[in-house]
Amino acid sequence: MELRLGLRFSLVMVILALTLSQERVEAQSRAGCKNVHYDLAFILDTSSSVGKENFEKIRKWVANLVESFDVGADKTRVAVVRYSDRPTLEFNLGRHKSLDEVKRAAANIRYIGGNTMTGDAISYTTQNVFVEHNGARARAKGIQRVAILVTDGRSQDYVLEPSKEAAKAGIRMFAVGIGEALKVELEEIAAEPKNAHVFHVTDFNAIDKLRGRLRRRLCESKLLKFWLSFTF
Image 1 (cartoon, helix red, strand yellow):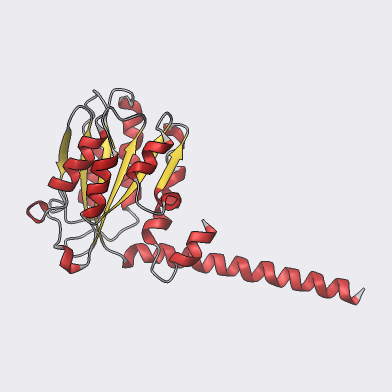
Image 2 (cartoon, rainbow, N blue to C red):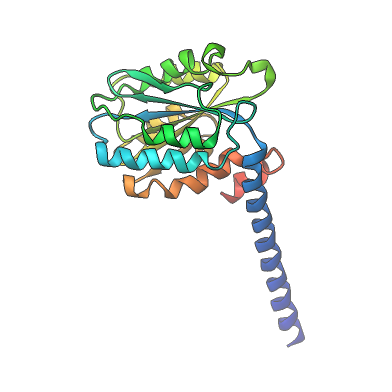
């Protein structure tokens, strides 16, 4: 009887310790968003398959995600590229100096329709967004370059080589797929390890479920990376 009670007590203590540890990790992860600074670009699919109504959900998702960061000239800078037949720089890394400015700009990202030239959009981002004359900071300053690509379907051009070039340029790529987006293509786009940089949901109504998971990946500190790789 005493042995059984002892085992139960030990089990309860283990569960409690794990729960408290998990809560600590999540709290530190949320705080980490304010302590890590990025040059951060969103690459948004505005092709015809997305549709205006669904693209509104993407705009809101972008605005909600950037709330996780301290946005500022010497903190996290944010840019947006939208693409379909061709990519367009909606706003560069040097344009908006506060969170409120970025959120207002995100609410006005234009939807255009057309084809899905994802590879071209990745190349464009590497060559035109993460450059100093468009607000990117010099790589010597140690600011991590991150791009989050959101697409709902198969690309109509090749994505592998443009993604390799982005990686060579020091860009950490996250690939967010919705609906018919191909896993193999998302994995070609994303940085290593793939399981930490590829996300997928079945439809646009579920995209907000990814926000917390993606935020954890972006906000984790160097001390938390080992834990998070097993926990999430």
